[in-house]
Length: 512
Ligand code: HEM
Image (tube, rainbow, N blue to C red; front, side):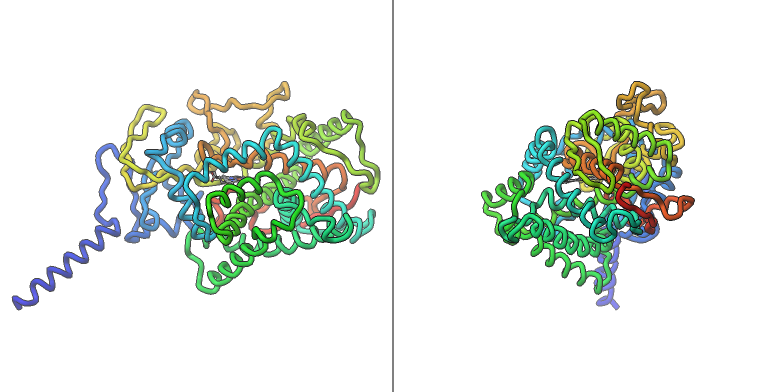
């Protein structure tokens, strides 16, 4: 008996130690936010969070208020739901709240890419140079040529210029914007490799179609891959696709291309100069493909759908597009004949379309922003309340619920109002209020702070170019104009632009 006692004690100590590690004994300390560990040891609230992040966080906000800590798969996340206090997270020093550790881990799991030190700084520099300001003039031109290659060719060949073509609007928008964006950034097939411009253009169409087809397979697996909850069969498929992309957008392939954007070449050069092996550079290309093409296509779908469902918005945008074309002496002839030249400057003359884009992003872009807590710290809320946050935890924002759907900031938040971001004098509206105070972060489709999307100006340009070309070249309408806007697929909350649960059929033809 005396011999059994130490064994039993050892078991007890291991069980208690295990439970401690699983977070069972964590208690809320004075000045900490309300703590909600959930029922499952270690896993905490992971199932509800994964099933429907927005619904889960709304429930927690109702229960605990504007700040609370929840356990999710072994981590403690403090969610801050008061938009007036977002600055405390977004502007906090990196020595306290770090974005890098979490992003590195995700990027390694999802793309097999292991990032270098200082890479983020360089991404910001190259993006400022090539995806904003003067760099955008070049990118707009490249996007334009590729959009016209894809949009006009297929319809002329398949249907002539009279017949209607029917397609899913989500599939159509994602397909065109993905392929044109990819070609504009990653380059075109050289003419000399194919013998003529037409052949090179044809190669671009076929190759980008194949890439999109594979990308969509990966896209569907992505949320579960990011949460590391893929069943074994899908895990194998994700692994196969990952390897396929490392090849399809590899450095070897890139060396064959013409018109590669400075954004891509300069990032690749940096890796090369820092001795990153070529196989790892291939993986980086895949990461850039994902970051640059995974969001804009779905956003283009919502944008076009909201316009088609709201006659007043459509008419206002049409008027604006016609005015801009007329002012530059351009018109489109029947049957889509005559390419229009849409420049960066022209895209700066469209306040109505800007408001429509911003409104549709407010309704459909829903990233979760996550920071790792590197040292014990105090979070100061706008109302003066202070909360202590523990080292090792994570702080998170989900602006979709906290601000984009807040009815005080945006009255009737579920309604699409095309002029929500437009002042009566046709300039951009930026003053939104909560509790009588101006809200700085009133719409956050791009995230905020150091990790704000570096491609946002290019993305807005792409969306506007797509709408512009749809309106100038095509007649298009919903197959069933009464059909409701489909709900958002709740398994993708947190990853940027949302996708619909199902597609919506529409028809289009070259304008008569
Ligand atoms: C509608 C389209 C887009 C949306 C809604 C979107 C949204 C976002 C969001 C929410 C983030 C993360 C921000 C954060 O964690 O704080 C992000 C990151 C990023 N985006 Fe975008 N994005 C779009 C298009 C683009 C495009 C067209 C490009 C490039 C050409 C791009 C390049 C990137 C890159 C490289 C990052 C990582 C930034 C980092 O590591 O700091 N995005 N985007």
